Length: 240
Image 1 (tube, rainbow, N blue to C red):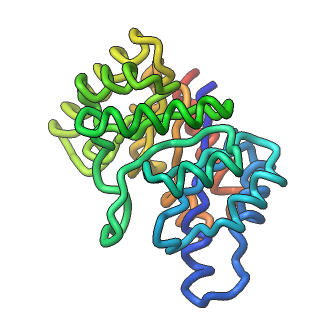
Image 2 (image 1 turned 45 degrees about the horizontal axis):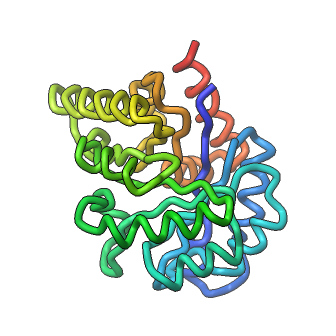
């Protein structure tokens, strides 16, 4: 069964819109776990636009599943991860002006910096994944810097349609095959929703998908428990 990591960042987005205590992303995460989430993902951004340090610390204390901390490759964020010790840490690129993460981490251009950060966190028994585009050079360098896993950026696939989407799916299949051949665990995420997730979930090398916006958007209508259950059912169908 493919694992589902539920990203609860946008529960915090609603909270921060009023700068009050509700809705609590930690409470949402615990409900998501009860509904079958295999892990909880949060992105602690440098500008703290949604998830706060308090959320990560409480989640680490209260979560019964895997906690995956998405983070920039900066000294401050690496030090925070060392103190909190999430199960997984996923290094992502980050620009303050972007609405959401745009594109994958350039591991090739920042190899030495990323290698040092990977070694620091994995030395604390934290599994490190790198959020990268489905490109062979990035995958090979991810292996060279010692990452445990890669998370393939699925945004180009999700944003495409028709023949172009089929082509993007093929690119992801090839990337997943190469990564697994190199001994990397393969995850996927970004832009996945209830309508486009099945072809990605059917790629046998992919063992985990991290999905946030579409689940939280669905939860606004049906509640987070039902939204998570619906996604879990889709993922189960993909592996039948």
